[in-house]
Amino acid sequence: MALPDYDLLFNAIEELVLQHSPSGVEGEIDRLLMSRFAELGVEAWLDAAGNAIAKISGRDSQRAIAITAHKDEIGAIVKTVGTEGRVEVRRLGGSFPWVYGEGVVDLLGDSQIISGILSFGSRHVSHESPQKAQQEDTAVRWENAWIETKCTPEELEEAGIRPGTRMVVGKHRKRPLRLKDYIASYTLDNKASVAILLALAEQLKTPAVDTYLVASAKEEVGAIGALYFTQNHRLDALIALEVCPLSEEYPIAGGAAPVLLSQDSYGIYDETLNSQLRQVAAYADVPIQLAVLSQFGSDASIAMKFGHVARAACLAFPTQNTHGYEIAHLGAIANCIQILNAYCQTDFDFSP
Image (cartoon, rainbow, N blue to C red; front, side, top):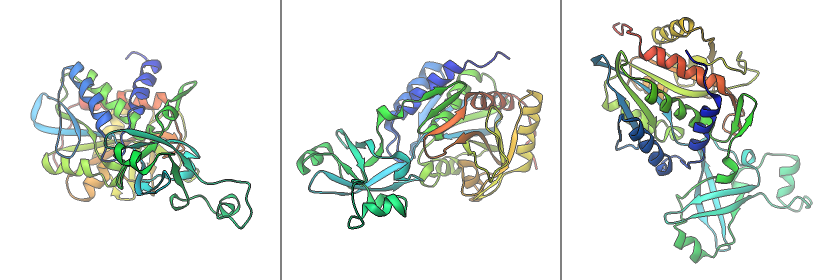
């Protein structure tokens, strides 16, 4: 197999990262994905839950598998629109204000995007000011932060900024950085996995069974899109694509070797399916790491926990600073493509 083109992969991820897609407001990336699927000539649609789905017909149409990569990103949601152009927000998914730092954020209004400054208050203060505690004692929380827009209430209302409006890190701050063979960016979780789906949509021609490539919606707030999809489709197997956090508590090394999960916060993954993925990786001469994670969940583990699928797995790429300014090896992302491409073309027995 030809060596992966890291430049092409980087560019594909960059394009996806720059599409705003906070949970439940995912129209920007939906338009891009449907355009890409159309260019590739694959059957594709948006379902009622907001999932962007491509179907590749297999040699055996009586069986089906799905590969998911959630397209939504973490951020914040507006709680209060103040009278002096200040907007208060609360977490949407696993976001923390100190990860973003003071800087530009975008408020995705109903009719206009308003950029503002995520603000924590001045530093030249004494203990008479609440910001002093953030310098010495506790991390800043959303309750202690605000977005400074310098807009009048009328301007914010005209833009459609209201309780429920989504906030994401400013688009110009999202542009990825290349660090040798690594990519560094906000929202690699999970835009890099969506890039894997697009690569599979291009490369898969005649998989063993019908294969659904699902860019799932609203994963960061409960795997809502994946639960809807799996409730409405009979699947022999479900594989989620994800980031795998690099941390001293997990025996995972950074680099080009993907990670196959055995368990996370929602339960165990299917050993038969994991064994099949390990076989494919070994045959393709792709190194693979194994992990048990805490404080983690995926489309696959959540769908399996609720009985929507009998067999589920999660294939991930090692990532630093998860849910922050993330860093991942492009080789690990490329190797996920290679493993899944080979898996989809192998005729496995899914019977009990």
